[in-house]
Amino acid sequence: MDFNLTEQQEMFQRQVRRFAENELTPVVDIMDKENNYPFEIRPKLAAMNLLGIPFDPKYGGAGADHVCLVLAMEEVAKVLAPMAISMQVGNVTCDRFNKLGTEKQKQEYMIPICENKKVVCFAFTEPDTGSNPKMITTRAKWIGDGYVISGTKRFITHGTFAHASLIFAKDDDGDISLFIVETDRPGFSIDKKMDKLGLRGTELCDLIMEDVKIPEENVLGGKGGKFDALKDAMTIGKMCLSAQCVGLMQASLDEAIKYSMHRMHFDEPIFDLQAIHWLLAEMACGLEAARWLTYRAAFLKDQEINTLKDMAIAKLFATQTAVDVCRWGMQVHGAYGISKEYKIERL
Image: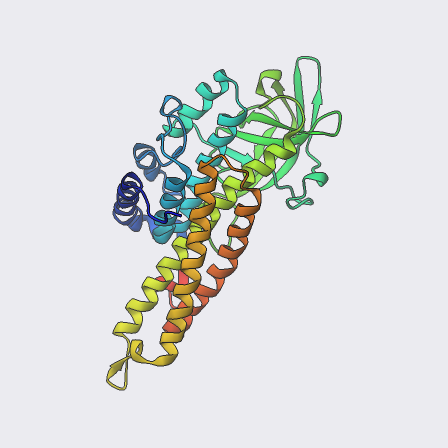
């Protein structure tokens, strides 16, 4: 049982940390307050190989592993969580092409995604189905030389500026297939950007397809059987989300410690109060437990072990614990915790 990062992983972690602190800090308000995406960052993400971390360099990837993907997500989320969501979209869509795509599809999409020449979004959720694949209503009808797709996808990250979308739809047999649908095809429309409470600036919207015709070559991974492919894709998403929660928790703990050491009460910092010690201790314990569950899941993924259960455990624990840790961080700040002058309010 070796709990140490490799030298290469530690170096990558430091590089992403510097990048996040230097490049993402200045655009926090653009995403959080203005609810806009800072497009000037995307070429920098691509230059850092952050849009395709665990993939072969011949397809534009960084040639790293899933532990590096987790480390990057954590460091970026510490500074700006919505940008980590943006990275997640690139890595999840690349993962689908990497595992299901033909050589032509990999060349056509993976390299441009990693180089920020194309943006592909991931579209499964629908207005009335939530995340239940059995209730998908989007349909793909075979017409002899391709498919006609109709339906609506909801809460799609990067939907407002994607060049294409990976659409899960039911085919004529009622089975789930996966389709590459370019967003400039006739019948494809994009609803307005959603204004939401948290993780702002990720350009969330509905995708509406009304008899959108695509060629047969736009089927990804062959006809049918894509429920298992969806579950596999969800493991990557859960791993990325768990890492983002770890980043949020680390930032919350850092902010709580910093505030408590400077906030004075009766001529002493509140850091010295036992009640504050209890809160900081709870935060640190939750953070470490979530971190190592997440790192372990990523390590197992790199060993090509089925991680469906491990990713689900990590995601459940990390998300629940992140809510508690950020709430405790706000408690340390007291009344100032709801002030936008302090980072903990956003966290």
